[in-house]
Image 1 (tube, helix red, strand yellow):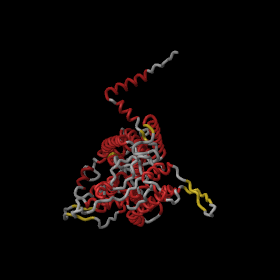
Image 2 (cartoon, one colour):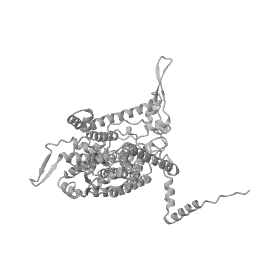
Image 3 (cartoon, rainbow, N blue to C red):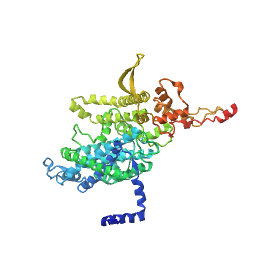
Image 4 (spheres, rainbow, N blue to C red):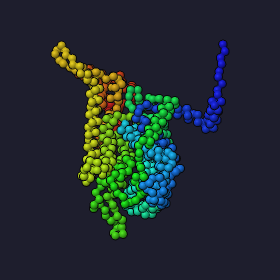
Length: 591
């Protein structure tokens, strides 16, 4: 019996030789082999981060094209292009080149609009991706640093959007730069010096557009690329998080390998994202600068709003009262403190972003949990975190709506003053109401989970016993659903040592522990405990509580109920702050 083999093609031999050459000199084969075996979970919410990555790639591709034709100069010229309404109008070369891109360069307007839509989707996908990470607790150990990397990426995306949005030097972007100048000048003592440094003199100066161009195409994209690389490195290093379910633990990842399945899916998904952005750019007009005209500080009209991601800052400025909020320190030649700008444009955003950045560390201090977490939380099982996140989003959306108070007034024929006052009250009452309502909803959903685990799903089927008693038949949960509803930890408020030791000496560090205990109570005092093995057995034994077995039997029962045997038992928060009790000495004395 003879066999025949087909000789590899010339291309295959060249590819194999190239791979072997690189492997012998760089060892890349081992890294590629290890990386290709990485397992990634298959859930739609994980694609939010991929949308951000693919929209950023779209930004880079379209940005290279636009860079070839845009002129970042504030030199004044007279327009003589094909747009008749602006013939003879004096404008900067930046605005003139933007018009040339829009009307004279083949595909220029399409690329401008693709670039702008990709920027909006880039920021939106980062925000929604961070919301998914926040509400599911994906920022917990060991991913706190990766959360900070994502937070910095969010700030850089805002900087990239604002710097690019301001480049055309039209009326709308010029007004945004004017507001920026006012915000910078409101910073005490150093504000005026910062303004001179940024604008190269008195606003608007002649340097701001070239400087923004450098920031937009070089500085910010370089930092974003570096942080995306670091972000993906952490994802591979820590392995991917996964949603709770039977068979999913902190020691494994259930999903598909990177190569070839996930690579194929990711590649196809890139073309889907790019195609949708291109379709939006081709069919949806955005930022028609020819209707606004070149920057001129005199035109003022309703409807002058920035892109959505900066609208919260606009709303904050509009809600702040203007009268009686300025004072001078240091005499006549001192410094003017403009609280009507400093508070809404610096303090309020600073507080919101600081809370967002530091939350993982605050929650870790309140929980007292030093374990690694690779299985995500269900938002209902962390009522305080979910309510806090919703309250932050509520404050953000109220500020976004306040930034459009003039449009709301003109479209619905309402008083802009009344609208402003309503939003002022909502800014303080809305987040509080959202926190309370969301927390109540989470606790109610947890109680519903307990009811389902103990009694099962209602079927609507009524059965009559021979004794005349009527009952409704309940359908018991299967092991997978039961595991999903009982797998979370029972986190309780921290327990601390007494203020004084046995000799009456005040303990060092008591105040710090007391502060952490108060913080922990704020997080976990209102809670619903998950179903215990004893409760589950009692519910299934129809009230025969005395027949329950020992503690070891209870662990076996809950393992059969869907919890993998051998997993560590849920721990309450903060037990590490209480000295362990040694019962050996007491037992010896009793003997």
